[in-house]
Image (tube, rainbow, N blue to C red; front, side):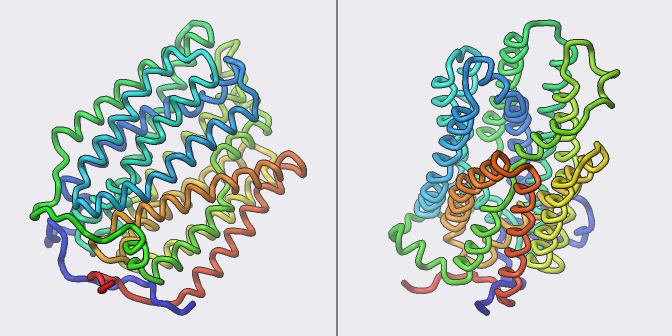
Length: 434
C-alpha cells in the first residue's frame, strides 16, 4: 500500500503554455477548457431545471417511490457502464470531439420528449437515453480537458470546469423556482412549461461544441492496444486510487437525501413569503439546494488551484473530512440554521473533491490512456453509488435519517485512513511496454 501516488511536475505536454500572468483568474485556462465550461454551464442549467421537480412529476403521473428509485438507478447504471468504453475508444482513435458531440447531442435530442411523457415507463426510456449520452461524453470530455492543459494548472482547469458546471446548477433551479412562484397554472402545466424551456440551453450547448471545440493539434493515430491490455497498463497506482474512490463513494450520501432531510425540518420561515398554494417546504428545499450549488461554484476553482500547489492528496483528504462533518451536521439538524450549515459543508466538499479527483486520476496514468482511466474511474464510481444509495435508503427507512448520515460519516473517515496509507508518489508520462 505504499505505492506512489503523489503528483510532481511533468514535461510540458499541453497545447497551451503558462506565462508570467499566472495569477490572473483564467491564466492557464485554454480555449477548449473555456468552451467546455460554457457547454457544461448550459447543459447543467437545462438538466437542473428538471431534476428537482422530476420526483414530483413522476408521482403526478402515477409512479411509486420504488418506481422512481428504479428509474434513477437504471439510468445512472447505464451511463456508468458506458463511460469506460467511450473513454477507451477515444484513446484508441485519438479523437475526443466526436464522442463529446454525440453524447451531448443525444441527451439534448431526447429531452423534448419529456414535454409529452404521460407514463413512468416513457420517462424511464427518456432518462436512460439521456444518461447514455452522458456515458458517451463524460470520459472523452474530461480527457480533452487534460490534453488541453499544462500540468501545473491541471487542478485549476478541472476546478474551473466544475465551477462552470455548478453555475449552471445554480441557474437551473433558480429558473424553476421562479416559474413555480410566478406562473399561474396547474401543476402539470407548470412542469411541462419547465421541460419546454429547459430544452433551449441544452441545444445551445450542442451548437457551441460544433462551432468551437477543437481536437488536439497533432497527427491522428489509431492504437492497436486491446481494451484489456489498456486497463492493465494503467498500473497499480491508478487501481489503488480507484479502491479509495470505490470505498468513499459507496458511502457518499446523495444530495437527494439532503433534500429529503430539508423537508423534515419546519419551514415556517417561508410560510409568509411564498404565495398561497405553494408548499413552503418545497421552497425551503430548493433554496437550500441552490445554496449548496453556489458554495460548490465558489470553492471549485480555488480548490483546484490549491491542489496544483500542495498536491491532490491533501485537498482530497480535507474534502473527505468536510463531508464527514456535513453528514454529522445533517444527522443532528433540528433547525434551518443547522440545515444550512450541512448544505454549505456539502457544497465545500463537492467543490474540493470532484475536479481534484479527476486531476489525480490523470496524474497517475500514461498520457495516451487518459480517456480509458477517466472512463474506468467514472464507471467504478457510478456502479457503487447504486448499492450505496440502496444502503442509505434502507437505513433511512428502517432506523432513521441519523443512521443514513452516520453511515456517510463512518465511510468518509475510513476513506481518509485508506488514502493516507497510500503514501507518496509521482506522475506517469509515458506508457510502459505491455
